[in-house]
Length: 294
Image 1 (spheres, rainbow, N blue to C red):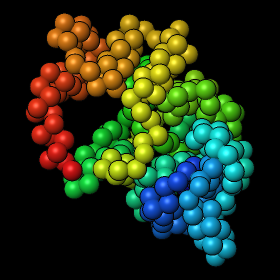
Image 2: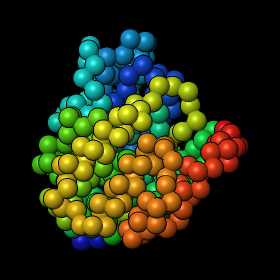
Image 3: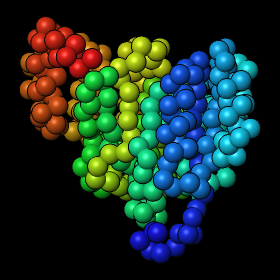
């Protein structure tokens, strides 16, 4: 129930999920949606030009699962265009997304609905980064998210929960972005509808340990940050620009010079920047830590 008491008893929630040639991972992602404790869902899977057996498996599953809708692209159109197709097809009052290599915890949708307040542009929840043997929880502290907050760091993570009309009103994802498409979309939601809210805790598992092809390469990430900065530069203050510079450097995985670290401390995020200073200048320690996580 919405804090204002205006939600229907069991509103339909749409989940969009693009996929391409990652069937083994996709099975886990879909299972995590269909096993939600909240059951009034529609799951729109967009098969974006897969050449493996993804299509056959989806067709067989959808024959016995009425909540599953399959959209098929014979030739890949890219993840963002695929998401936009699902958004336009969505029938749910509410909408959220999932990547095919990740998964929801069972009460994710229930948690969002219980805490939803239409005064916010969207809700977000923390993430468990899972490396294969151990996990690290990030962005799990409750917080109202202003435009200023989001222009310094993507506190909302890679998925949010909102009313479908809001995501349609901003025309979904910007397909010209090479990366940071989610970040750009959440900023535009805040620009259009006001502050957002991050809930305490986490309900999304982002798998970091698998060997499948990564959608966002370092080159694409750097291009994405460049596109984000160019698009939103006029909204940024000095602190925002300092923190955007740091995020681009950390995405590059290059050495973090001490002089730049000292300059960047003006933007806050002391712990995050100090950790990157040490790991980028002491690569052996960073390598040992990475191996220990796998």
